[in-house]
Length: 330
Image (cartoon, rainbow, N blue to C red):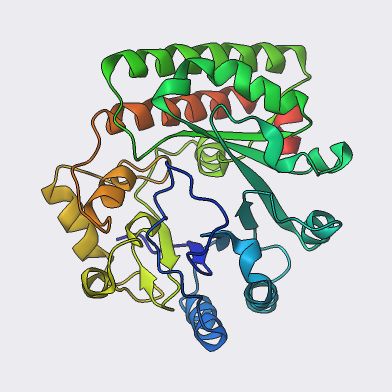
């Protein structure tokens, strides 16, 4: 089993919103204890991950500012100033100057949007600052046909990085999948047009794995993520963290990923594999480990295949563009 190098940190499950598509709504509202956070990050460092990177989400991380400051300080102390750190927020709690301060510390910011709601959550961000902040867009079946205009709307609002992913809590029927497929194709053609013109492209904000794989000429490999839950323990997949503690405990892993095999074996028994980009195990885990377990919503594998195909094609095409390579640090 490939050793994890990407740690997803849930400071708590608290959030100031209750978005219907959020797979993390059941995550324990209790916050991770500072001592447990320090121990966990030290253990992850001792496991010597290759090219370590970090994602901080929740819940809403800005509800836990002291813990957020602690996490950032420990990451920089243990892993250095160059270790990538990505913070997801709904943007509603950003204080004046806070986004700029986080960016100055090398934190990559993504403001999350519900498909169809528009960029209201980040309306308070000055436009020059939005050029340094990414927008993450959750595509629901009902909004699948609006992928191109909605993302271009976010681009026009000033965001230089865009990410999109299908709602993993919703069923995707044949008609919705066709809308998503058609929209993704139109979005790709628009991206290719901009690459050819050499201007107007945006960073693939959730595409670092696809870009890295394209740059190295490798095929997508197995999942290399590890999740740190608010209870201070490591788990194989962040999409499972809404489960009650009793169901989660048997799946705890080491900081080096040892113990993940049990989770992946359970996924395989359900006919689900795993991958680095748009992992097909994500919707399965979200449903299987929900507070009230349910069947994986229909069409999830196809929806995620469309999204991962878009990322792979855009990344491969982008490698020939100097602007694209600068945006993605290649």
